[in-house]
Image 1 (tube, helix red, strand yellow):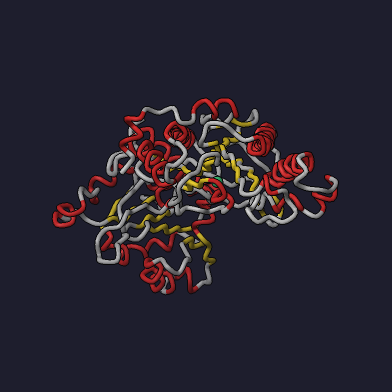
Image 2 (image 1 turned 90 degrees about the vertical axis):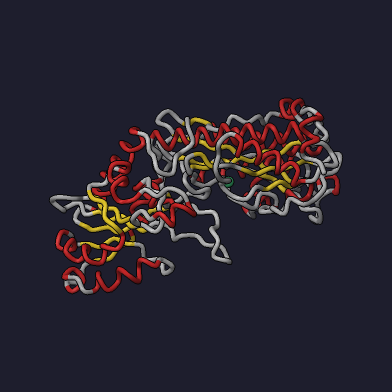
Length: 450
Ligand SMILES: [Mn+2]
């Protein structure tokens, strides 16, 4: 699979985009929908900061230009899909590289009609006659909102009190169910990120700084063709792992400590979200091993329970029960299982939830509840499963030998008709981890040293 080009799409990609647009237009039926791109991203001095296209816009358009605007008019007799883009301009191309332009955008992206952005104020009023509902992005930071507002308010539709709905709600429901192109991208992102995690395991030795391991990890991701990280990498040695979103990555890692890495990269805009925890000396202490095996057991059992019809809250409770039971066996919790669950005592050590949707965004869109009723898992959904246990260095009523141990294990799971498929091929067994750590050559290690 080749990395995505900014101005070329494969025929297969174009076909998938057409299917997504059809499904979207079925959902809005007699409406008219406006979906804007992300704003151009300028740094503090007017320089170009890293641009990442709006995920909803990308999902329906495949277009990476900014600013641009997609309009969907399912009832229009001539053109149901319209894209407004900037016209090509040689000054901008000199500084910022090739632009798609009006002529190429139609062929490349498969819209019925592509127009210069400068024309949208002139065109939109007449299209309102083909709709009875308006879908748009109601978030206040959208600049298009200000430009569109007078057009919409002056239209016959608004005068007749037509409903205004949030376009993003419709896209988010579609994005929850991954098509084959999305699944393939998630697979590749996971393959690369897993390789990066394994390289970090090979690389690390006691005395390394967290940022050195981060550099190795991210070098592998970029080297394999990933253009962006899915989120800031967490590389947390020892007790730093007990801070859930630690990402200073600035400390030295000591002999005998565990290293927790939560990192994932994008492939074609879809991100992996993987966490591994392993001993930097190549050997778990007995306390580390007992907690690790408990987290691993809860993760494996949760993954085995994934199937259509299951609920995330049930999986969460199931994993919590395994962890609570294990904490009692180890003497970390001193009460009955019923009492632990009743009073949520295990949540002192497992303070986050078991997982979240994954896709174009690391905490991907899609509602977890519909009309306040939890939805069940269905084929095509992609979810992370990431139980963890963290014993804070100062945790009262817990023997000091457990203090400062933080463990999380996270894989990315696709729900299928038969059950599930684990997309994350990264090692996680105790023996596998112990035999991989610290095995890379001194030559490679030397590259990441002052
Ligand atoms: Mn996650």
